[in-house]
Length: 231
Image 1 (cartoon, rainbow, N blue to C red):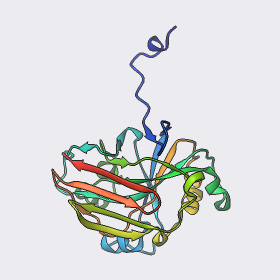
Image 2: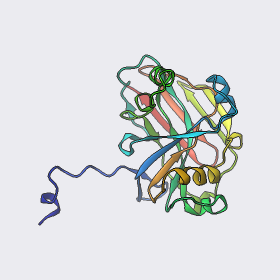
Image 3: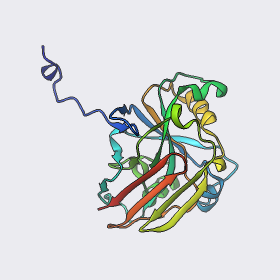
Image 4: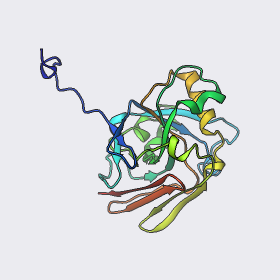
């Protein structure tokens, strides 16, 4: 039986990220996101800075490639940007030790956790899940992956985002409350991680609203940049 006839509906397209400097791609299995991992962002959102970061998820098919135009999403009047360091895993497991966590990293990229802030806040007040505010079509723009074999494991470096040429977010990876190894170790206690998983590691202060027609550029020193527009 041919593969085209072995499924009752067409198989979904495999989401993937390009690997910088090559013609290869990195197939994405799952997207995990870290909430509250930069102190100044916790303060600007009015959250308790003593609480540890936590995890939520987006679907892999919500990835948007560099250079894309993203439709302004439905249901929201407060659509916001959050620039983040993205970590891509080449292997995984459960209960990974912190000192072994970076062995599982394939590479790094620049990403944006797009957020329907009004819906996220309404869910939080009702103690409901965050999916309506965080997990929606085209909510995970992500640039090309840079292999750790080429750039190492960045622990510091400027992370920034501008809208229409005006800087909105400006921080440093060294300001993360939990570093990459600690994030991987902690998340692996919650779920068995695997090759193809990517983790968005939280955003620095300066998050703010986006409008139709806005042009976004963001980057991380030593990793690269990402540009998208809002349709």
